[in-house]
Image 1 (tube, rainbow, N blue to C red):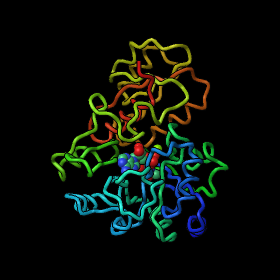
Image 2 (image 1 turned 45 degrees about the horizontal axis):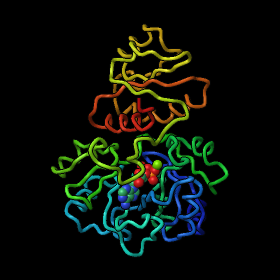
Image 3 (image 1 turned 60 degrees about the vertical axis):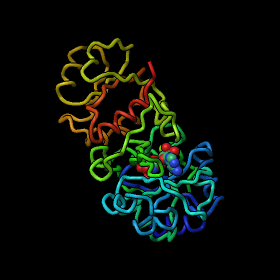
Length: 317
Ligand code: TXA
Ligand code: MG
């Protein structure tokens, strides 16, 4: 952690574990470092970065928390998997915000992430540590395989416990809008912010690339279907089914249509499914399968975030 902080202070890039996914971190005050982050990820510069702080109180260094509900949300949900989009402080480099008047800020709960930010003594810009558009990394080896030589150091904190990226909540809009569902659920947010709405891709145009219909995608084509319908699918040879729950597993296996069936959670718990989702996709994507088929989870709690990632990973057919 001390080495990571040294590298970060001198402008380097360090992949750090967080409770959601691994981040590719750099000193937010160094435009040159920010440019290296975009380059390493092959990320278009119109996609703004999330700034990570060690403690909720440090968010004021980069963002204006005087908007209604911002401080209450920070108090209730930080440290944790929530990114708030807030008016930026003028000092934040344009490259971090893609020139927007807002900045995404998050205080992660992972003790290693927090300690590294604290030791570095500066807020860290950190997108997910994957090539732009590809699957997010939930293990240090995913980062090593995808970005390898492009980072100065990878800190291995073991598998990420949550497994899907943070909830992105835009408080600069009225009503407040969830741009990306995550572990902080709509149900949880609605208790604190009754007017909150979920970005609706059928009626609204995307404001952030994470909202693009194709993102977080594996190399293999993935077909997403309603829960319980995979036994009647028409897969090609060497297809893999991703299912949710022991009952579904049994029915799909009995259909004999898939070369392999992977259950994201035998006890049908969406929290378990989120935790293994990207690991399972990484593993399948390097195998000799022809295609993936997945069934949707119930659309509530973190299940909404899993469905969102499966949708973005899917072929739109
Ligand atoms: O869980 C996470 O959020 C992880 C870990 C490393 O913290 N980070 C992450 O960052 O997922 P990234 O860059 O892969 O996704 C950030 C998302 C993008 O879709 C970006 O467009 C959006 O947040 N975003 C960032 N700043 C924004 C802003 N000012 N306005 C709108 N969207 C913003
Ligand atoms: Mg990302």
